[in-house]
Structures are given as structure tokens and as C-alpha cells.
Length: 343
Image (cartoon, rainbow, N blue to C red; front, side, top):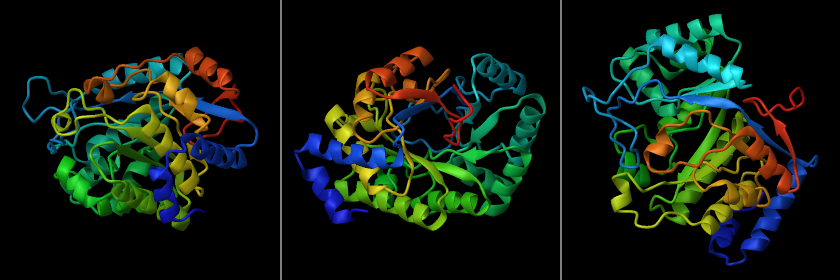
């Protein structure tokens, strides 16, 4: 593995192609078969009520707002059935931090889903789980164990933003701190669950602060091996309050460099996702030569990033063509990045 100082040198370098080639070599070592994967799943936002008021979020509504909602279970079931009908293998639940929804609400939802459907539940980011624990008066361990026993299969890496408390205080001061995010993922790993790690960059952080994030993710993976993938994506400023202070979004060059450095630095994580939701399909395709071996989901539904003004869309065939045209073999995967039994 390269050192922190070497990674910082890469960020400062103008040799984008050289960095990309080095990242591509690491990708080939992890994935010598030339396969690039994707998943068909759905992001179901079960509530947009939230008490955290994050400055980068255009999705949330304060409690009592006329545009706020909590989805009824039947609506959620309809969305899951549509996902299965489209060949989907998983659902991603993410919502605001609701002060009145205790763990029994989530347990009942998960149990009813598992009774009706054979689908993987990749649900509830670290801030959501921390919130569930707090409003329910439970420890993190007991909260995650109870959710797992009710049907939770794995945990997404959302809510990480930048794992540096100075950045978090500036952009999401009410949301869980760095240590709480760490505690959720370490606890889940200790309970035998897999999770993903994400990073939202380009929100005014320094390269040193970005490296603090990388260091935390790399150390957790070294200790637990519980992360299935790392997913970096760039902050979208258009319709957010933070956008008034962050005047320029991350460029495609900055995205590709960050993706490549993450592939090289996080050598103990097998999968690195090249995103299309925020940078677009063409940059995503380039990312497959900058260390990415996965293009994420066709995203049957997505409401959070689109609320900030980004509306990229992709069908399964578009993603498969994007992968083929980059020189790879497309394979549908499941949430744990298993492709061997799928097309």
C-alpha cells in the first residue's frame, strides 16, 4: 500500500494519465477477468422529514412541513414489486432522521418485507441507525442486532460525507460525528454484517481532510474486512444552501483523480465504484480506466441527489453498452458484488 504522503503527492500531481494507469493496474490485480459489474436495485426514500438541516441536502423537509411524508407500507411494497418485475435483486432504504419513528416501526417494516418478498435489504445509513438507537433508548449494538434479526441484510455507507469533524461541523453539524459513523460500521462488522463506505467530496474540504477520510476507511477495513466497496462521489451544489459557499463543483478531472487515488490507496477494498449519478455517464465510463470496476445501479428511483439538481438517468442496456464500449464485460451483480450466478 502507498503511504499517505504518496497519496497527497498524487493529488498535487498534474499527471492524470499516469495516476489513472497506476489505478488501472491495481484494478487489474483485483479483477483480472475484465468484468465490470452493475446492480438493479431501487432507492426507496421512506421519509423526507428530518431534524438535521444539512446544508448540502435539498431533499429533507422539517417536521410539520406540508411537503413532508412517511411512506405507508403498501406504497413501499408496490415499489418493491416493481423492482422485482424489472429484474431487481435489492432495495436501498434511506430517509431523513425522523424523531418519532422508533425501532419497532423499522422492525415491523423489515419483517413484512421479508414475509412478502425475496429481496436483499441494504438499508439505513449510519446517521439513521444512530438516530433509531437514540429515539429508542438502545445501544448501537442492540439496535443493529435487532434490525438484522428483523431482516436487515447490509448497511450502506451514506452519511459519511467527509470523515473529518471540522468539515462535518461546517456542513452537517447536527448529524452524527465521525466517531459515530465509525462505531456503526465497526459494530455491524462485528455482528457479521457487510457494509459499504462512501465519500462525498468537493464540499470545500482540503486534501488533508480528504486523506483523513481515506485513512479511517482503510484502517477499518484492515481491522474488520467488512467493507464490500468504496464509492466516492462529488457534491452537487445547485439547489443546496451549501452551494452558496462552494462556488465551483468538482470537475471531471478532480473526480477521476479522486477515484484513482481511492483505488490505489484503499488497496484492501476489493471493489471501487465509478459513479454516473453525479458526474454523468461519460465520466463514469472514463472512471473504468481510473480504477473503477463497478458502475453502481440503474437506479429505478432516486430522490435525494436529484433534489439537488442532478438528473442523470440510465437504463440497464445503457450501462451494459457503456461497460462494453470501455472494453469490459458487463455482469449484473447482487449487493455483495457476487456475479457468478447472474447474467
